[in-house]
Length: 269
Ligand code: FPP
Image 1 (cartoon, helix red, strand yellow):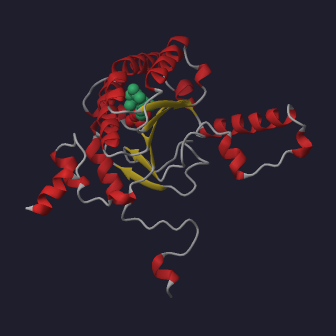
Image 2 (cartoon, protein in one colour):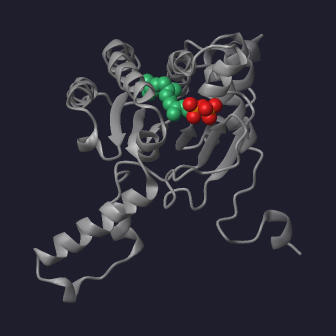
Image 3 (tube, protein in one colour):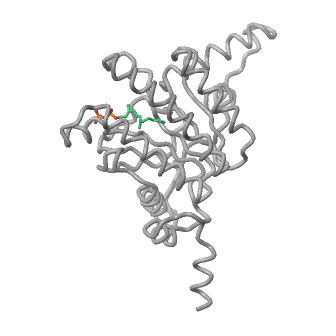
């Protein structure tokens, strides 16, 4: 009886039955500090249902909502979602890009109360100044409206590309040095690069999740994922829910992280 009570009281509020079941198997002292998700498969999900691609994106918003809420409920410190890559602009029809922009604006407006209820702070990575002005304004508004929250940091990657991020970081480093004593004194190390990335507000991801089966990083956080575990699920993004995030964490906890050293078994031989 006592242990049953203890189990129930240690469960975070708001998890559904399936989520609670998976969560209760987790080692809560070893949750990842930062999970980054490549949301893929909206188009395939729609095609399987003979629907237009945009129907997949619309359904994907529900997955964002469920995943974000579950992540906040289990007190994950940071969640990053790859919503719109810098390549998406060039390679998709304008009608689809327009739809994604409208969806994003609507999402930001509708979700701020939920973000506040869950104490979530919103951040962005990517070249936001290249996005349509109306989107930039809504982004700034939502960020400001959640700025005082002290719980999970939700970072949306919008018009993001990892190589572009490195170009921007190196440019900023060189410009700062040129304006402050000149390039002769410039000493570049990993910490300096970290401090000039869009992600300077975040720890490196411990876990990268990719939906829809593809085994690629697609120019996502290339510097930051140096030691991350990668979890690929065949589930298309519109079918992904909070319980799938918990399943990814369960799998992550079975992995042995070595950071270039020896594993437990090898270290003793
Ligand atoms: C990948 O599926 C998904 C995207 C490029 C867009 C992601 C957007 C959402 C999930 C909805 C809006 C997001 C927020 C944060 C409100 P795909 O179109 O590449 O799928 P496919 O590879 O099957 O074609």
